[in-house]
Image 1 (tube, rainbow, N blue to C red):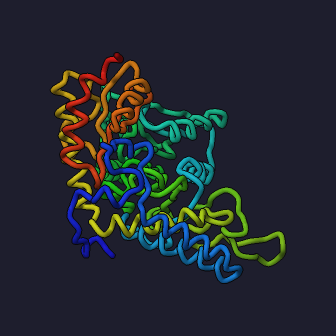
Image 2: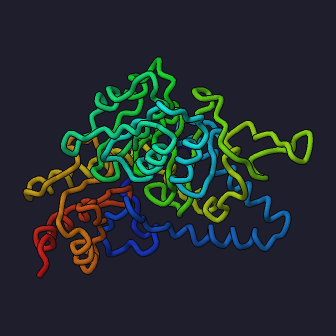
Image 3: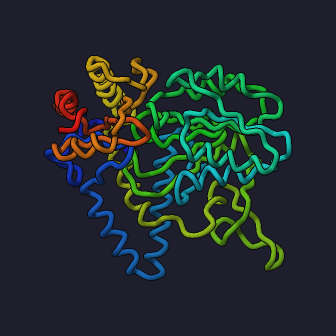
Length: 378
């Protein structure tokens, strides 16, 4: 079902999910629940795995189903979609494709996720200048990212939704600011895909994990914008990413994003993700985004009213589903909340609460009502 056919109303029933009933679940930014329909996904995978040769090729049919659904969700083409082990691998596939020279530079926000920062930091040994753009408080300013770029900038990495603070970035506006530059724009959509619109046409590459808002498991996605960056040649090859060349020592990379898949895709993950994407499409990403943003805005407002040091922008247009505040003992608060069937995410000196399509008004009221007591250990 495509987004224009979506007709279901939100919030989504908690009974559609495994282990969700009776809980106020705000931990999707870390780990969401699986769908109950995934029991059938597992069974289909197991049946096909027992089917020998024909069953094996049905695994690849599921991968193609996933490519088509992801393409619809991201305004891409199915051939743009590569299925890899995780988002960090996808980042390195892009970084490893460039011919780095001493004096080149890369640009990344100091507040951005470690996968991108670490991948780029590894380039220092090649004489590449890693330009960490400081935040303005908890805010990453687009103009600061652009100001850090120059004629030797080879790559800019930015998360569409910041995992630490929940800030949402206008990727199309950033791309417009980079017009005329040959720098690669690499966008991490791990906290955006499945809960707000992601438009892969605005950047050269989009990467994402599959186990957060898109409701899959621990696999990764690489979206290659072949129209903007037709010369992408990832380092290395495997049997799945290439076809035979003139001799046994030669090969030709596949013409589409399958060139990043060195071997078998995560077939079990594809069965699960295919059913997750169908579920999300049955509501429509625009409706999910409006619902999640409204609930996140209520969380931000409630946290602010409690006098907490809120890290997330108050403007719904500048956040997605995450609301975060600083806290000295995030793991302790997370455990105390869990004892009351309230699931939040606590690390990096902050608490993050993530709304999604199943978040109810009552869930938001519950967490805000209980927060004052949860803030301090008994």
